[in-house]
Length: 313
Image (cartoon, rainbow, N blue to C red; front, top):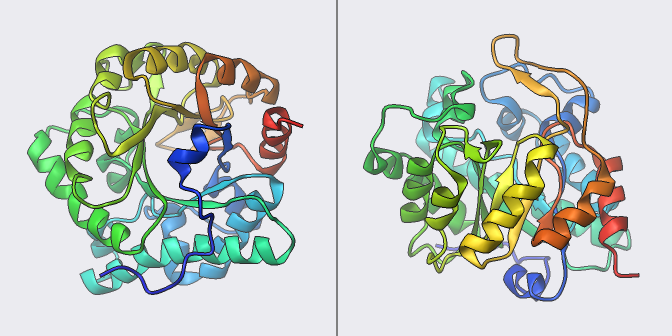
């Protein structure tokens, strides 16, 4: 069953839009929520607010639309049946919260339009890696000890729920391991929702150590995949990865790196200094990037700079 809430988004598909121009993604959900005073020191991370304070999620999405983002990535990155179960949330309520993540992004789009935003707006349903559910930093390592089939069985149920909410696209994001990418590509088949696939990388390899050429090649012939690229990585690793993804897959490239700071999983805190420079965006675009934004620690101000850089005017 498809959600009966009418989409307030663009009539043009995201895939069609990418053929004409670059599209601006939003920035980090967690840092935007934290800047608004919300405590995310929880294994569910921003997904906790789906249950406890959904209006805060709408406001975070709206801040990015107002900053110039064309796409809102939902707060479902760490939302899984297994993760919610650890908090005593049953499957029916977990499914409701997954659906709600899409509806909240739609509500932000409606409000943005009510405030005069006339450009097309889209919603990407975030699907984080298995390691995000573990909340122990393994999303930056991969190699969980699970088979491709086991990972597919983990991802498919929440993908089905998110598909029923009718997002414009799946964001299969922060994938550290080519084996998990293979599982996700299997899991999205037949759901009727296009997807982008983005790896978390270190240099020219996935976080699990596989060469990017091999990792990107998995998506080259996947009809469901409209873009391939990287996210939640250091800004300095982006340009070479963009060129590789474009060459290997022939598809539009998606990029949204972190600020350049490093995540300390034990302390659950970011360390170091930002190295994200919006002026780098033009080089990414020239190398083949068409979906461009920011991930952790990249806020609305940086998204405004990206939107201005990519503007054809």
